[in-house]
Figure 1: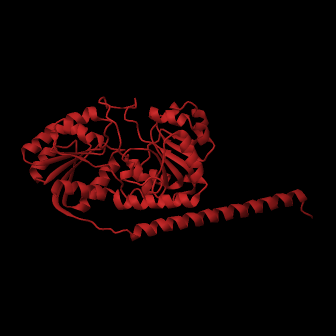
Figure 2 (figure 1 turned 90 degrees about the vertical axis):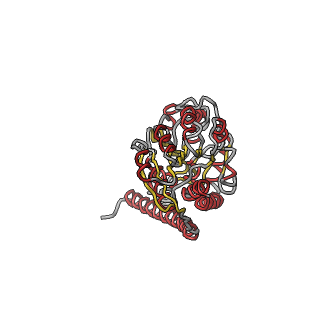
Amino acid sequence: MATPRSQVKRQSRYEGAFRQGRDDGFRKGWDHGYWYGRCESLLRAMPQDVRVTPVHVLFVATGKGFPYSPLDESIAETLRALTARLSITTSNQPVAEVAARLRPDVVIVLDGLEFDTEQVDEMRRLGIRTVVWFTDDPYYTDITSRLAPHYDDIFTLERTCVDYYRALGCNNVHYLPLGVDPASFRPLNPPRGMRREISFVGSAYWRRVDFFNQITGYLATKDTLISGIWWERLRDFAKLEPKIALGRWMDPAETAHTYNGAQIVINMHRAHDDETFNNNSANIGAVSPNPRTFEISACGTLQLTDIREDLPLYYTPDVEIITYASPEEMVEKIDYYLNHEQERQQIALRGLYRTMRDHTYAKRLETMLSILFG
């Protein structure tokens, strides 16, 4: 019995679509595998020198749980590799009693917003050196301004806060941005379902909403993923709703896969005077790059970031990272780099190298220990 012509045509179309899908999948897999191999080759060629400082550090983690717990763990593990002895506690423990018993060379408090300064004062009375590393400046300076004078040394991730703390009578204030943990943020091979043209991970502070309101229509036409809280604030939220993972707090592993899965990751710094959860009544400006700057570039992904004054201290614009100053410029550069694959990859690769060479937590904490102990 002869096969109906219509059935033959359907079978032919099916086989053609199958071959096309197979060929496209093979090509994309080959391209990504080659790219991943280039990243791995670069990382393996980098020197892995570790300088151990012969001191005993008591590290006081925030103990605040997620999303601070990954930072607690990264700093703790890095200090373990860089010091002769490391003891760990949290801010909700009797730290002064622990320090009195252990007599460390220094107590390093991370964040410190929920740590009782009476314990800091007690440790100083015992002759134990105390250090705090503020991780959210300048957005909580109404609080940190009361805490800083209790410590021997203050480290802040925001350069504008150095003079602010000195004006409060703090003698030893140092600028030290956060960095990246290569165990969490590095080139990966994300699942196919996580591949996107454009990704943005972060909360919808009002200044960000104002900006995204101007590019909502454009992002709606692209393979876009936005993840974070408060994005229902967008004026045309319905246009982007299918592309928004609303109310999500990603852990480092999912965030790293999201960055790796995107051709371009947008970074937009939080405004120092935004109305949302802002304890910065002194209106201290912000010029330093956020931690996300280092995490995106560590994944070997092209980063498109707004401009911060200190950014050129860490990356060379248009060589290791791409910047934008307006919604129009962002759209123009997204279009350009989505259509210039070789340039996109070269910039991303240079950004990856710079990050792993200069901006890991090992480098940051080596700097801290060098400042403290010479």
